Image (tube, rainbow, N blue to C red; front, top):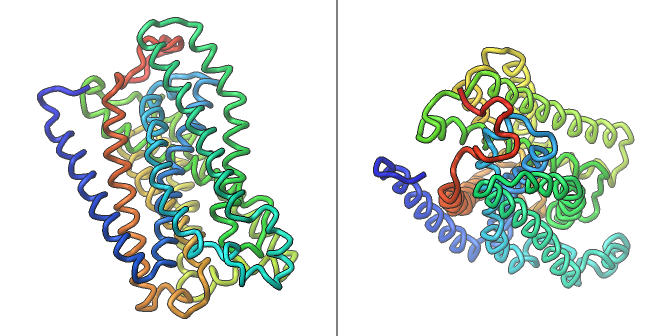
Length: 398
C-alpha cells in the first residue's frame, strides 16, 4: 500500500498519534482533580472505539457467512479494525485502576445495608469483574487472531479451504461475540447504576456498536477509494448494498431503543424508570431529542433515496455524521450515571462543561492512538482481497 506519494498518509498517522498522546496526558491530569467524571469520560471514549472494533468483527463474520461484493469492498477495513483489539485491551487498564471512582458496588460502605447491592455482590465484586474482563478480551482476541490469520493465508495462497474455515469460525464466533458483549455491557455500563436493570439494554448497546462500525467502514472506504490500488469510484451496486445495510442497522437500533423505553415507561416502576429520569431532565432532554432526530429520523429519510445510497460521497458524509451521533449516544448513556452532585445534574452547568471538555480530551486521546494503530494495520495487507474465494462474484469496485 505504501508508495512515494504517501507522505501525507504517514504524516496523518504521526499527527493522530501525537494528538492521542496529548489527549491521554490531559485525561491523566484531569483524573487527579475530578477522577469520577474524567474516568466516566474515558469510559465513554474507550467504549466508543472498542465498539467500532467489536462491531467490525461482527460485520466481518457476517461477511464470511454471506459473501457478496459489498463485503469484499470493506473487508480489509474491518480486519484492520479488529487488529486494534490488543491496543484497546491495554487502554482498558486505566478503567481497572479507577474502579472505585466509577462503580459504587466496589465500595463496602455502599454495599453494606443495601439489600439490592448485597444480593448482586455475588456477581458484582472486583475479583469476578477482573476475571470476566480477561475472559471477554481473550475471546475477542482469539476470534480476531484467526479471522486475520486465515484471511492473510488465503490472500497469499488462494486456497479455497480457508474460506470454509472462516465460515465455520464465523457462525460460533457471532454467538460468542453476542454472549461476551452482553456480559461486558452489563459489567462495564449497566453496573454504573447497579440498582437499574434491563433485559434489552445489551442488545441496544450491541446494535450501536454495529452502527458505529458500518458507519466507520463506509467513511473509510470513501477515503481509500481515492488512493491506489483502488483509485476509482466504488460501483453504485456496492454503495447501494452498503446503504441498505446502514439503513437496516439504523432502523433496528431505533426499534430496540424505543422498545426498551416503551416497555419500561409503560410499566412505570420506580426501579426501572430511574435510568431515564436523569436523562430526560435539564439539558439531557435536548440530547435525547437530538438522538431521536439525528441518529434515526434524518438518516432514515436520507437513506430512503437511491441518490444517497448510489453515491459513495453522499453515503460517506451521512456515515461520518452517524459516527458523531454514536459518540453523543454513548455520552448520553454513560455520563449521567454519576452521583447527583449538582455538576452532573445538567450538562449546561459550568461545572459540567469541564466534564464535556474531559470527554472530548478522552475521545481525542483514545481515538488518536486508535486511528494511528488502525492506519498502521491497514498497511499490512492489500486493500482488495483479490484471491479470496468469492472475489469473482462481480468485483468490489467500478
